[in-house]
Amino acid sequence: KTALTLKALAVILTVMIMDIPMAMIMSTVSITVTIIRTAMVTPTAMIIPTAMIIPMSRDITMNTEQVYASGSAAPAMTDLSLVRLMHLASVSLPVGGYAFSHGMEYAIDAGWIRNADQVEHWVREQLYLGLAGTDIPLLRLSMQACAQEDWLELKRINELTLACRETHELTLTDTAMGEALMRLMNSLQMTQPFSKSEPVSFVCLFALAASLWQIPYRAAANGFLWSWLENQIAAATKLVPLGQTQAQQLLVALQPELAAVIEQAEKISEEEIGAGLPALAIASSQHEHMYSRLFRS
Image (tube, rainbow, N blue to C red):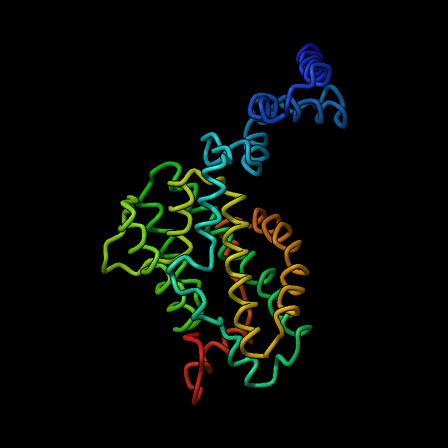
């Protein structure tokens, strides 16, 4: 055991001296790092057997961009994949994201939101208490299924995603955007396993498009969140109303939150997926009964 620990230490020192990028050795050295950490904090007689360490190391590696899904290598972000990410997250993508306020229209009509500060609070709470616990973990699971070309698993995740929508309008938001993205993917000859009559979540199709275009998961998650955030601020600009400068200030203020939301989402297992935002569900339910409205949700 001592020899094994010394050998592991030699590997790490060699890497440090030669300045080898960690990205090139992460999958090989993750087990080694775990062994060394164990040796540093555990008496020699209690060093954990290697067979017990391997699953721990795999879990650690799975939370990084070094391993994409179940041992598959993560695609590198190329210039082309970056451009395609901007295309996929663009407000000009013909999926109708601008038509949905996600309950914000009723919240403003009811007086819950009256100014830019309250818009920021509303959006931030949805990011951390909604998307971090549902959409982003589901995006991750969908991309893992796509990487393995496990279409039955992707369809199962699609059913789980739609089951997480609390109201008719929130479900409509997801499936209407999904239907539009499916039409676009078909027109671009992008293979997808869903039938035309099947209700499909925008989240799952976004994940599939990102996988087909070789966009890494974390970049795809940032693009998904940015698209959602931009649409929410655009809705607030029309409804509060906000000035263009206020809208840009809100976008800049909320941009740093996206990375934190992704970090939080990475800790969510499938069993923990879900969100509880009663006021959002109430706003969404009441929205369809409004006398006049600009948005579909």
